[in-house]
Length: 359
Image (cartoon, rainbow, N blue to C red; front, side, top):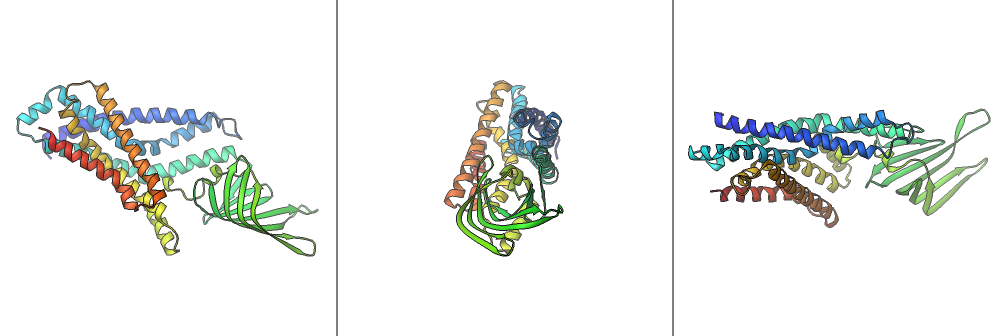
């Protein structure tokens, strides 16, 4: 690698690190503020709030990496442009493509660092953070099991096979227990529901409900289209143990997709999560390259504040396009590849056109 390439890469990485530090601190502040409404619920206190905030920082940093790379590249290359160093490089025969390649090299370094954080550190720490918060808030409820989910709430045990959305669950079994005169627990009823929907507070609506109540000398069965259930268990608690695409690394998503395909289950949502995760990581390289046409064009002589605003605007637009396509793609059944790679393809096109038009 030539001296010029190392110099450009070092400049972009230095400013990207500063931007990431700033964005992570702001994100931590917002996360901590969000915890204030939960302090005092159960045994959840200020200490737990600080710990939850700290453990969520790697996940926040991983999600903020593309926009941090863009702003860092804008500030780093913009600083060189204001000092006429890029003009000197151009006069010495260094092409715009070469400068963009150096910016891409910095993006690759950030991509590798983000990949390690997002694959090995962020998911387990985020999961542990969720567990700390949930166990503190709902200390009277406990769960067990690694295949599916088993939850105990007082004298009731609930088994859940799968999660469809944030508030809809399938394959639900209810086991109600009671104590006899000797203090020993015994089973008094078993119920099954094809679908459980969280309404609000403590209220659930069970659909396709069937139960069996054990009497002294007989078994009574009931079959209802819907059944209203009241329990302390809520989706926030269940979300700790039910598979969540945001909390899984890429290798975890691949394993879960293999499990779904082996059992002939729907994979569309999880394929979208996989390709979106990979594409979002690769967008870090493109974000660094996107800064090149800006610093050679309208942002060549402006201050760092203006570049910061432009970087935030571009990052927000990319985020909104990504989220819009992801949500609408789920509704209209678009291909997971289109949903995952569509925004990145558009970003690559804009970046390529911008670099080609630089004179």
